[in-house]
Length: 368
Image 1 (cartoon, rainbow, N blue to C red):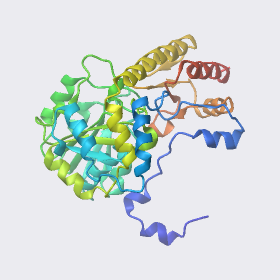
Image 2 (image 1 turned 90 degrees about the vertical axis):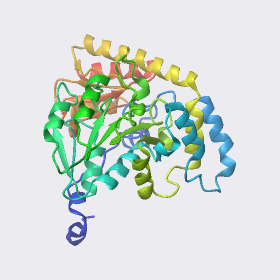
Image 3 (image 1 turned 30 degrees about the vertical axis):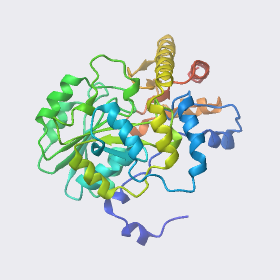
Image 4 (image 1 turned 135 degrees about the horizontal axis):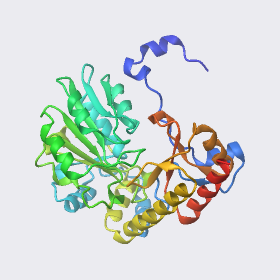
């Protein structure tokens, strides 16, 4: 059904120019469209192990209280996170996924006439939250598919309100070390809020990759965001958080919806924090799977973007839409990333060994 033109005209200008976020194709949709019952989903950067046993036990224990509202302040989870990161509980903002915190940033620090800066190939949510509040999105060119911090500094002006930096970046998996990030933050003016989006933090094994949650005392304009959706395997519960100066966290709480994080998500996340065995196994599976996929890409003569996250983007040497469709017909779901300026690439989540093997075999057939 076509929308009446008058309704489109009533919408905010920034919203009119947006395209809806396109998530990875769900298994149920592939089953409906292609009749495939044993599909493998490697499209949404989920942990193939799912939740750990401690999180599952917390979920079972919490079922009896579903008739009650959750703790709107998230006291227990904030306390656990504060202890983990060595910060005050008043520095933590809980979100319905870390995307929720990104939206708080936009609602508090952006408005018409202000600008947000991020890199080419950056996470699609950044322009969405920016334009939704009437601000202007400014994209800087990438270097080797990753952030060029000097290019960002060159674009900062009196209208700049926020800089979004994904580290590692999605969908490229590129990353920044501690020294260049510190040098960058030292040069960012005080009136600009810098968001370090670290959704894949737990997967990174590089020795100079920083834990920036302790940097907030040095940079009051810094917000670090994390999630339980990836390495902790809780994507279906939507639970993330931000760490910032207490004054910034207070501003976020002024726009945060009441009870934005449900009770089961809070309980599972608190339990997951202490499940070191599950996290260790998740990282091991990911490291081995990355080697499994990239060795296959090399054998097939395909280039890929080196990644430190739980996914890898591979150049299939042609517009990737046809290869994507061929994989779907084999029951393998990956993610086309043409919308990120990478028309020849497909992004594949690291799965279990047998899931990776199925992708490799299907890709080889799709490429002929």
